[in-house]
Amino acid sequence: MKQEELQAIASQLKNPSGEKGIEMGNMMNETNINMTKHSIQNLNISNENRILELGHGNAGHVEFLFEQAEKLKYYGLEMSELMFQEARQINRNFVSQKQAFFSLYDGNTIPFEDELFDKIFTVNTIYFWQKPEELLSEIYRVLKPNGNFCLTFAQEDFMKQLPFTQFEFELYSTEKAQKLIEKTAFKIVYTESQTEQVKSKTGELADRVFTTIVLEK
Image 1 (tube, rainbow, N blue to C red):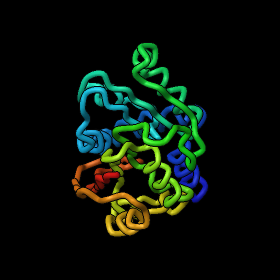
Image 2: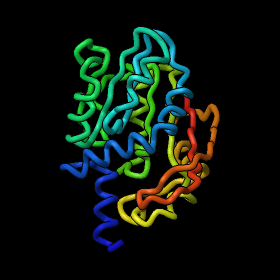
Image 3: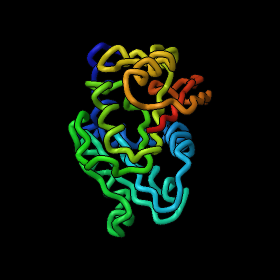
Image 4: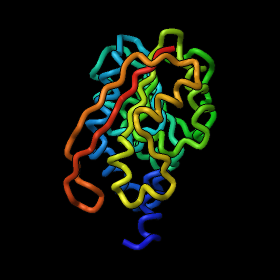
């Protein structure tokens, strides 16, 4: 693949747009679903929890989240206008029932009041954080005391084999992510990694190692 094509893939993964963006959203939902479920399951969701997700993509997984407990409220933040629209469309029943709420944000400032959420999670977004420490502080601010935040990402060793990650991606190992977290007020509860077989964007099967770090305020 040419450099321009790889750069285009990286840009679409960061911020899906146009017709290609819809395809990318569908593909990301399929390839990331195990990671997303892993993140959601490690939240230990309880009835009546208010849950925030950063960078939800097309949010095809929200139905799975609502199966975890009763009377939940889900809030999704997204930088991509296209994914915001797709998520609202896919989850229109939850939106009309005022169970799911989607908003756009700038990727740095979380547009919610302090201590609003019981649980927060994000999957495959850390590579694109512009100001990682500041965003973690924002997540900490909007999380209730003793609330949990699940940070889920694919390991650097796997990601650096993908040619497009040389553009726009900041890759993380567990150690690098933990060092970042140690600069904040969060406590690390535990870290869990899994290996799964995924089809790469170019069609080959590969072993992907991904990690969820569970944090507590």
